[in-house]
Image (cartoon, rainbow, N blue to C red; front, side, top):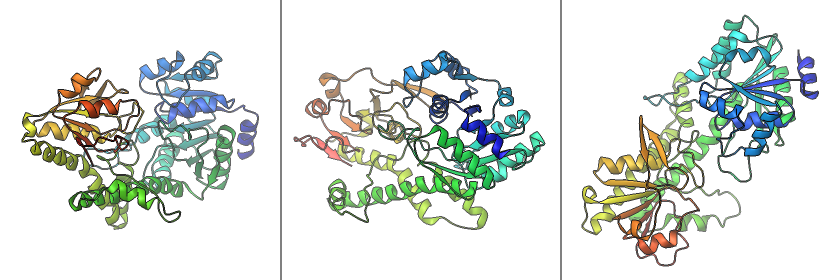
Amino acid sequence: MKQILLNKIRNREMIVGVVGLGYVGLPLAVEKAKAGFRTIGFDIQKEKVDMVNAGKNYIGDVVDNELEVLVEKGQLSATCDFSFVKEVDCIAICVPTPLDKHQQPDISYVRKSSEEIAKYLTKETIVVLESTTYPGTTEEVVQSILEKGSGLKCGEDFYLGFSPERVDPGNLIYKTKNTPKVVGGVGRDATKVIAAMYRAVLDGDVFEVSSPAVAEMEKILENTYRNVNIGLINELTMLCNQMGISMWEVIEAAKTKPYGFQAFYPGPGLGGHCIPLDPYYLSWKAREYGFHTSMIESSMMINDKMPEYCTERAMKILNRFKKSMSSSKILVLGVAYKQDIDDYRESPAIKVIEELKKNKAEVDFYDPWIKNYKYKGQVYTGIDKINEKIINNYDLIMITTAHTNIDYKMIQKSSKFIFDTKNVMRDIENRENIEVL
């Protein structure tokens, strides 16, 4: 089996499938197709499938004309029918792994996908889980589902492994193609074959580890590392505010040390799919071993509190002008979770808006990348444009995303007051009406 699959990879005879055509899956499918592999994408959302089959892109990290050309050549197609699994030699699972309402891991999409794949799984097939999850998922959950549902034996009839997605939407340097990959398979042969597949597709290095669990923990470490360090910075930011010290200036000074320090920055909270969620996966799994992840949980508490803290700071600013929040109009600038993208998954800005509304403020938002967003079953629409007159109509401008395509000089000149939670106005000279987080 190992040699058969390696030959198919080498000769570009392997047909590959990608389950889940979102921020991870579609760019991966495109790169596999560009590398010469016939690629079939799957998604339960017919709208996405129809767009792919029409050569229409909906993901920022995918080049529009590349997708169109691949579809026209028949190199890439999409389907809503799981029976496509019978046709492929390699399947990557790239489905969401959110938290449930109790902040516990929800791997229902992984389970459902595995159950459907098992129905059509054939011998000499590779299955790779890319969805971020807790250590043990690949072997404890996916492997058992695939074996039970297909009657095949992992390691003998098919290969299984985990290779964590590494996607940073909006990153101008690192994309799917050139970002290093980590691979851990169930058995050494599985690892070697899966690694060979990624090496045939990607330009980035492929680092092999001894098991799926190591690869799963590696992914959790990446994002927990950032969560903990951002939590530290956010906590010190609260302290520095009380001490009358600029945390932003402190960080710039610390950055001059050429070793032993990496800069992290404060903000209104954490956004995106990974950093706000992954530590919960690890702390949940740790309980199985009677282990309490106190440092991780402390950082999560701090970061989760930031939207509320920013709202309290906004309230104090308004009070200085003898304005109550309940009688104030506030414009929130930016609902994307990071600058210059249209992704608002877990965006702290949306939670800030929710907190402001809880305190009876009249709140609007403007985001040049996002016209509306869906939150808790409702759709919220922003204002179409901003200008001097519109800006001056608000009691407070609250900057929650550091978009670069906004005229901040105009905003400074036209605003009554600005609360800048991202320090995006650092180069504005007149700072009489600006307060920074």
